[in-house]
Length: 489
Image 1: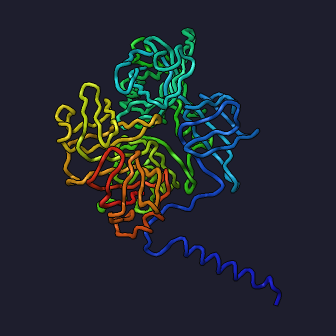
Image 2: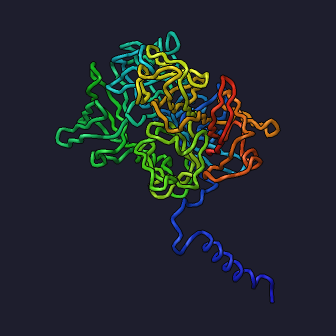
Image 3: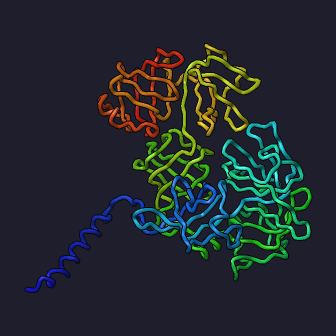
């Protein structure tokens, strides 16, 4: 018998085995396999001047002569990309790295500043009824002086950023521009609301858009594509008050993504950055759903968390989801917190209600206008009131509180939960937030809250990546006697 006569049956048999391995029967649905050759990403770009590499969501994308770059619908080059721009990327992976095939940049907003609040925390300004919040990571360009102080009422700016769960625009880049009053180039992006096809109007947040004289994009698109909830970008001009926008062109974002090959395809790997909204955790507490930039995201017990744990997941928390597209849902394989999460529970040693600060474990925690204050600082008595604080670490190393409340949930034991910066099995210590926790008298638990040995605990820790919760009682400014330690991610 010729050797090749066995090949066809063998291949069929292997194919059947492969199909059986992929699912079938009553197995629960799971994420489709990631296509190794294609991916899409949405997030904030980082790019060094003169570099041909663009980093988005921690992934370095190479570019070459065939990479298509469009900025605000205009053909551009890779050298025109700037840090802080929010981009969509379609890429291919050859097994050694990812190369961008197409990069699309679209600002969220362009117009004249109508209000500014430099004393707020965080500082913010308003363009077209949209409140723009800045933070320590916002990139500024073409402003004098360079920074928030260069923004003034009446100044013309272009803003890149991501919307949070409250509808604010969290600015990643603010660039001063010259305004051509004869040919206004104002822009605003958002989800259509209060559509009135008789009056040819809809709303984008607090702004009423009049589209009666507008064309639609992409080519061939008409008013029929408009519907409440559809994301659009309008081009034209704000009125002086910034409350009415007269559109000359309306871009239907999903249709433009289809034309540009930027809409994620079923089964493809997708990485998306944004603020959690509509969080719903199922009974059992290990799975659930939320939305991210309007896309449905699902997670399960197999989803990996980085920079925090499932207990840190909450509305308005900034995350990056890495997963695969299944229908219209992004099935999360990994959820990374963009800012490292911290949980502290102890008696506050100092409280400053005037400046919005309190001190726990020797660390200063800043309260701002976005902090959920369940217990007013004025009601917290130093060295008496036990406080629980959920916070994140910003790029300067400062602790920014997201929630503060008086709480006895941890009992008499102090709690520190953060990413481990160092682990020393010989000394039997772990270090987090600059605090050394001595674990020689501790019990150990894994990510599933199951008992493990001390050796298993240290073997599971990767410094600057693994989050650990430490419970103890004997605390001073630099050390904590641990009674229980638990791996959180």
